[in-house]
Image 1 (cartoon, rainbow, N blue to C red):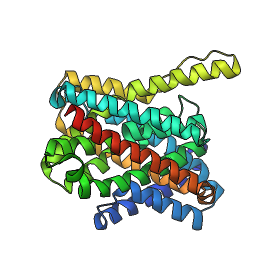
Image 2 (image 1 turned 180 degrees about the horizontal axis):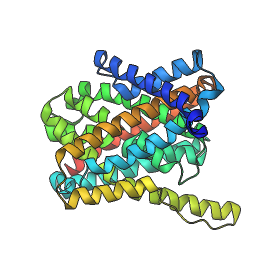
Image 3 (image 1 turned 90 degrees about the vertical axis):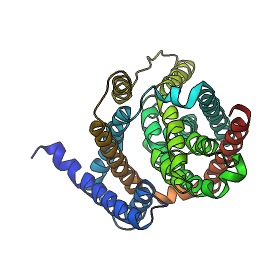
Image 4 (image 1 turned 90 degrees about the horizontal axis):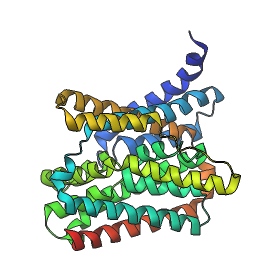
Length: 329
């Protein structure tokens, strides 16, 4: 057996096992979803029982490579025709909402003395598509593993709260209109799974609208990666006096190519559904690996400040989305 394969298989195997258990538990607790359960279960297992160094290389591989392929496959599940379906007013709402989220998350995080890279990961994860966006942004801004793991954990916990919160208060925030409820859920929730789970608690029609608004956010992944990459390049020049080129990760380019192909030619729905299934499983395995690698003691050490950061970002997301919906839609 190849030496590298022998080194990574134990960690990948444990991550897969945690992911499978998480998916089974998600059948019992569908409100949480497999992704959230995977990261929480991984944290418990990794911090209580599995500290073996031999798992490290495999879990790191699953965390990075599996998320990368998951991001790329997302391109086969979205098309540019979404803009037509939600209309230009809907597209403007999404762009403004994402801009507000990014600017606030970065500014607020810097005020709380978080590292620049951590605030950008937080901003991208909340504004675009959760773990996938964080995975796409991280290498471009040269974020360390600790920042990636902490941010993904926090963003998933925030998304779970919002997922359960919206069905209870959506009518209060935006009224009885199903398209407005879809705009609220699809315009703010972090992952596709959370969007669908939250919207399905209201009605199938809200699921359709919420998914369209969410897809519009996913389409903005490439511009967001490029913007953060350019900002990182500029900051590196100021601190290191050395110019760096913005390198778009291969899987982000793959996402864009798949998205263009999916928009220009008719791809068999089986391909899109298979891509979505595989992308979801790879993401859940990667989240399990992140949970296994997360140092819970270090995470909790930042507890109060981290939770304050998360609550602050959540509050502005909800308020700005509600205001923009009333303004534009």
